[in-house]
Length: 166
View 1 (tube, rainbow, N blue to C red):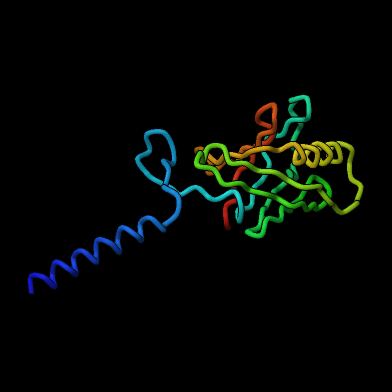
View 2 (view 1 turned 90 degrees about the vertical axis):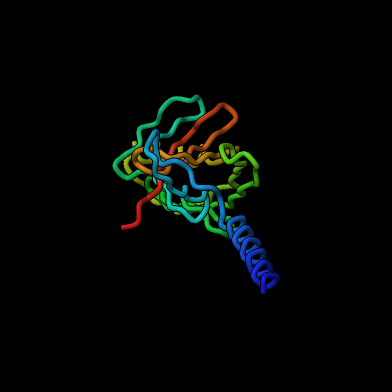
C-alpha cells in the first residue's frame, strides 16, 4: 500500500509540473507595486488601437479621432483600419527568448482606395509606411492596459493599446 501511495504522489507531481510548463507565458505585474498579476495578450490574436505614431524622420503624427488599428491573425495576416481605408499585409512574428523585443516584419501593404480628409489621408500614409519599416515589437502593461510598441531601425515608431472587449 505504501508503494502505491508513493507511486500516485510521484505521478501527481509529474502531472502538475508538466501542466505548469504548458500553461503559456508567465504572468507579469499589472503595475508598479500593484501586487496583482495579469497575463499580457499576445501580439497576434489581439486587436490594437494606435495611440502614437511617428513619421520616417521620427516626428510625431497626429492620431485623429478615428485612429489606425492592427490585428494579426494566428495565420500571420495583418489587417485593420489605416485612417480612411482598410488594409492588409502579411505579418511574420518571430520567436525570441527575450519577450521584450520580439522580431516582427510586415510584407507589402494592400488597401481599399477611398479618399478622405487631408489630415486622415496623411495619417494613413504615415501609418502604412511605418508598417513597412517595423523590425520588432514589445508588449508591456500600463495603468490603461496592455501596450504594444512597434520599433524600426531608429527606435519606437508606433504605440498601440489593446482594445478591451465590451
